[in-house]
Image 1 (cartoon, rainbow, N blue to C red):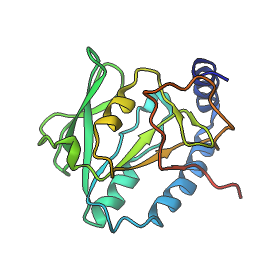
Image 2: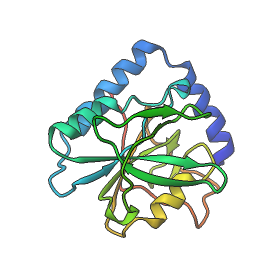
Image 3: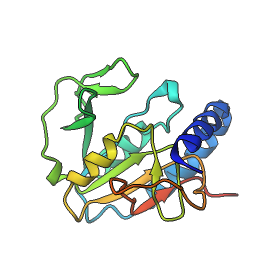
Length: 184
């Protein structure tokens, strides 16, 4: 299937998830993250959830990463050119919800994209080669292509990867790892 078809299907699948299902799926994702070796990374970029899109609640991950003394980085979106600017997310950082429901920092120190060691990437679905389908604006593909070549990328998803995405292009950046709930 192509990205537009997959985007429509997986937005609906996520929308159809019950609160209880989401809680259970997230527990599996959190456990995998809590068992991940973060010893070689310090500056970790993470997306904050768009609640109306039923995105994975990343705040428990943020709390965990802070507890192991990692620097957390979040972004502000510029929809005029589909780019992200990156900021340290401190405990006293004020968050403002933008017009698209994205929590963004208001009073934070900017960080150069080349200083980021690991990026948690939002997605709707991925394939077995770790390519992803997002919302279709290209924010993360642009962002990841600007990162240093050694940056680690981890996609977070409620759904297991599909076999393949039909219409990949030269701007699509594969992830290093995709974390999704383990089947029990």
